[in-house]
Image 1: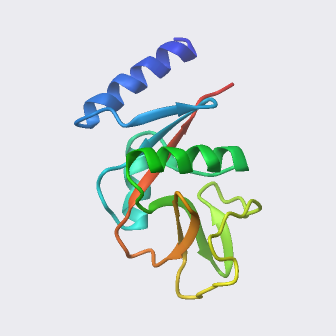
Image 2: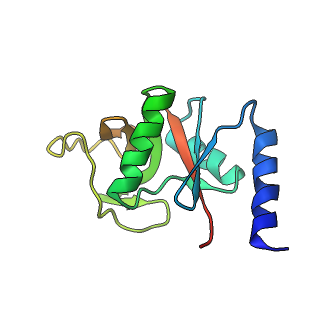
Amino acid sequence: MNEREDLKKWLIKQDRHSDNFQWIYYNFRFYYLSSDHKIWSDSRGDCEQRGANLVIINNKEEQEFLQKAITSYYNYNYWIGLSKNGGVWKWVDDTTLTLRSWMNEYLRPYKYSCAVTSSSGWAYKSCDLKNRWICEKRILQ
């Protein structure tokens, strides 16, 4: 089977998982914007069940795209694949944070260990709060 057929089967499977198709495409990636609310770890698990992971934001263009997508749905906070472990912010693929888009860079509460994004940028949150989330499925180039 080729990559195109695999992608088509994956999209059909995802469509059957949700009441309405919530995946959007941008730059060789599909993004799922949830309408439900879960804690960070449960959100990550939901993405994994969908064959994806919580979104890893790689550059300013991707951040701007997601901010516009969030604004066009509803301006909620969405979990992203960024959390702090041992004082270091890392993405779900274990890479260290380099791009920064914090709404308030100087506010560094140590008790908050997970990150959300909104139309305004990133914020620190308690991982036990319930928020919407964004999954990301990368397409091989």
